[in-house]
Length: 338
Image (tube, rainbow, N blue to C red; front, top):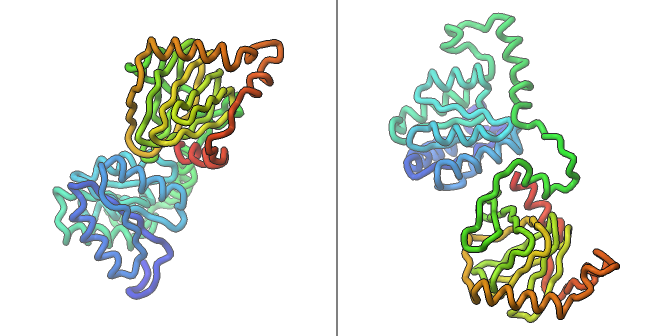
């Protein structure tokens, strides 16, 4: 640990749930008094705040450590540890912290807001900060580790870091398509033939699937949404702007908040969709009216879509009048979801 007044080589990112926020605040004040850089992400559900801290430590393990607090200190550790290279330990005593650093090279400290007093938590935190990896600790009876144990600990660092980071081999070259592999989609009860799987929250992204012949009645949302088609063919009628978009695999569309739109699916279709805020859906017509209108529009406006010219004719029907964001922006969102 650096001497008082000297900068540390790492920063600490911290957060808590409502049961741990008071203890977290006390520890943040202590860290700042030690001249340690602190980034506080605030208060949220224990699993959400733990995921945020875990994600940040995992992405920058060389210069970032984490500090989490919840009622027991257990829940936040569980969810922080879902990220590769994160070694979160729940410590209820200074001895726990000493063991966690010495044996497990812990880089995220989890404390209990319900059972640990601020003075005890400060002692736990100081011990965790000061203890180097492989130090003598209660588990070693405060003696140096034997050479065979020290060798095991050295090897464990690289081996532990690999766990959870292996990439599953897949024949799909599409990054978006890989997201839905082995995921069970939940039925969309209000629209027959539809199912959805939420991938992440705030901003929210999901994979949606509709069976061939399905129709989404005219509806609108309080949020705008981006989508990329992964499989199949669909038409979107933006009734507010009186525009039609015929989409196939790889096509992208942005629909602004409040715009009323109707959708028809010509094949089994899957698409990736992203929006800000909580999901909502307000219908502007019933399903029977929607099916009749979609059938009529399909025949009148794009009668040659599936003719001898195939997909090129279909692609020629696409309207590009609405605002379109960069596909790179969507791909960046996909990588964040993982």
